[in-house]
Image (cartoon, rainbow, N blue to C red; front, side, top):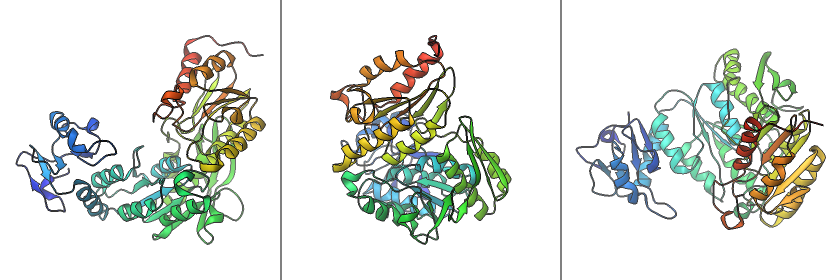
Length: 431
């Protein structure tokens, strides 16, 4: 329980404040077990949601306001971060994971292998701080996804999380508008490697000479062996232990190698770790395979050139007619047209039909559409039994040009439409 009268900072605690099971910065998540911390936001300060949180039954509210159940402090954000650092100090093992692609996948597989608590989808500083407050004393390992999109941000995250193990999965063009170059990306992400233990994926290894590496291939420090990938599963062995990952690709297998290595380093039975890995399900939009009359690969949560390339490589391993549906990759700076054209060339090599939507649609696919409704009108009648459809884009892609900047409205709607058609409407005969 999170006791408001035992916080590691000076505060004035209202007599009605009571312990909570969880802490959140999002007032929509508040309930009788979940306390609320009122933080400054881009548009509104969290203080504006304090009445809503109290009405929802928040056990206490971390704020500078004089309200019922308040834990009053001059600066709620500074207090939250101080609390997070204090609780994190009690954790026996914290693994921090970053990379241009594959962070969430690696987090899921490492968490399973270590039988750890891991961050939910959000990986902002406040979300990480709330996670550390809640689980810092659990005595189970913690796995934290640490994404950045500006210079100096990784140093701030490392100061908060202080990972015992730092991991970089990949280094590739992403957030170039803020970070400037791939070399700057490598330098910024590399800050995570300054702890007691550092590991980098095979793709990222050229940027970090001398750092231990993991994955598949010659010359890596920790290798998975005998990798086979089919539409149904990825299989490999690690230190003689067989690992089976249902509906997984090479990217998932690389993350599992990382998980197995960390389990070995921290004294866990590899056989048990391998069993836990078989149950991993990554969040929606991150290479989730939906088999059926036709197969839909939902990789629509986000996209960068290296991530799209990995998804296209996985698509090529499927039987049947392969269809790529690609949307714009965001924050690529002055090189965005060239990078979209590069991805489009790879799509045309690996897929039988290529669709593009939004900005740079013509670079991404032979059948190019300005909006998602136009795409669906062309795509849905085309798909037939036996096809395999990959859907991937950055989340900024949306229904109409006017709403294109609305965050969260992405190609997940295409995935939903495909699954609805597959499961509810008779398909075309193949051939």
